[in-house]
Image 1: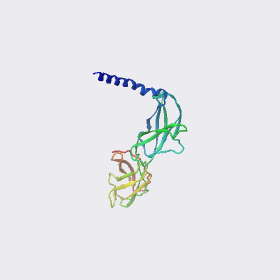
Image 2: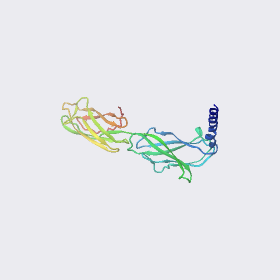
Image 3: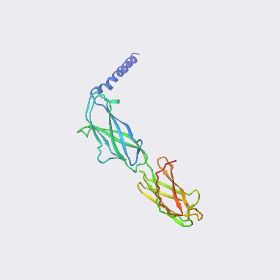
Image 4: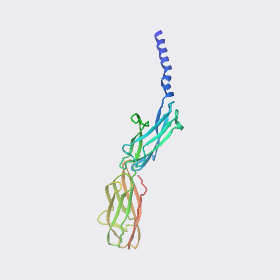
Length: 273
């Protein structure tokens, strides 16, 4: 019984000493805490600039002087020419935290070939002149692809009823991510303008960022067509690697039957799917 009482007393003594052991040093030390406040945009977009906001606090009882904070670039984040990735906070007062924290802003460029996902971003802090003694924190930054296609009808054509005429479209990748497994098609609802020798669809395997692909169709206008402006419905679908679904862009263009046409129709369109 006496042994049990002695053991309980020892445990209580140890517990009573724990707060002093944990909290006493904070009164005369620097405790620097860094956190990711937010990012703009969220998620970041491949090929674009993202602004990272880092909060820096001192939860200790001693001022932190000559404090430096550095964003360490690593894939897919790179420095923007002319912009520094190192900031001198100066002095961070004791117990300067929560609403009094210092907020730093860094801007970096996201590699345009980055696939959608979460990527590590490293931030380190050290005292000025003592870079060899540093503490590094790792944060997670979400990145998405910006896929965007532009279809331009560029031909100057004269569709004469009954005469076969080549009709050319150009598809541009104006986004920041490659486009894969594309399908382009056009249709004239009145069936006044129809393809000859093939259907009205073309399949494209791949278009890199900034590249373009031309697709050509032999078409003919109905011999009985009255001179007029006729509507072509254009549709482009492609795979979205971020969601695994298909996206579709649609628009309309006009083509004149019985005379010359001079169109330059472009669209970035509204994606669906």
